[in-house]
Image 1 (cartoon, rainbow, N blue to C red):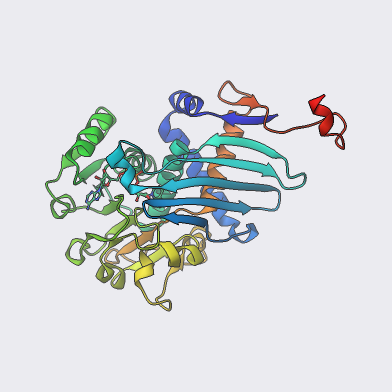
Image 2 (cartoon, protein in one colour):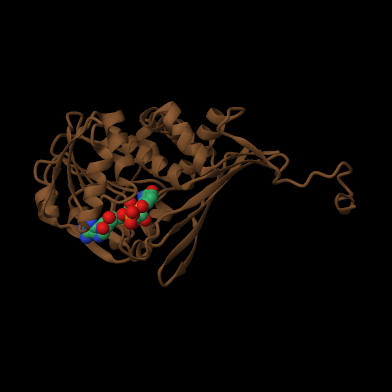
Length: 336
Ligand code: NAD
């Protein structure tokens, strides 16, 4: 039998354990896996692009466990009353090839993306960061805010979204959760006084959500929405004056903000900052950019955390995914 965490059980698990506890747990798992980065099999994710979006497979293996996520990105879905990002993921035993674990990964992707952003900010943002501007208050936004609160103590939020309903939704969802929220009238207004800016918009376009004048000295920019060829959020001028940190360069050159730059532009791999081999923030005036696209190892970490924490509990159910005939050479016998 394969253990399965459904959407309903993921929600129930979050209610029982607490969102911020889970975000911290996934963040810890990601940090541990990034510290053993070189043990993993890595490749850019495998995309299937279409006019309206992309469907991607994200595989990795540490030699003992193999994992992959199926995920989509369809920015126009919101006009149809549908979600931009949905997903599910699998872990399998490398020795036998048997799948072990299957989980919903729409909610889990939001948690792992938020945990990853907060891990990066822990290493890159100024230690006295208290205020975060959030541009784009769609599905990822509340998870991002909670991860930054749990890991960095950021509780002052300044939000802006072109869709007023998305801001209404955000304010309603976040009410009574320990945040002070200022609702901006524009991106320019929302970023005033921010220590950290999270860009979390969805548009399959070379957008300039942040222009050069919005990125001031000492800021950390958590750019998560530019994650596809032809889909970026930052003005190139911001990249030119910042230090840029990435997950897996081979994938980020294809999908991240740095697709706007020449291939010899200096970038730093975040795992090397996490191991302590390379310095992250070097001073209070430096601008740091986490050019997040989402990498397979983060999903592997999140799946392993959820598998371990839900194993043999009411949150994981056994599903009959694997055909196991009594005589392994007689698969046909299962039909009779
Ligand atoms: P969503 O569609 O739910 O929300 C996006 C929000 O951005 C919407 O509310 C929209 O109105 C707003 N928006 C669009 N253009 C804007 C603009 N110019 N200014 C201000 N707001 C604007 O999408 P989501 O699930 O929250 O995902 C957000 C983005 O993050 C997507 O692009 C998605 O592909 C990306 N993402 C990245 C990762 C990663 O690991 N880096 C993981 C998940 C999602």
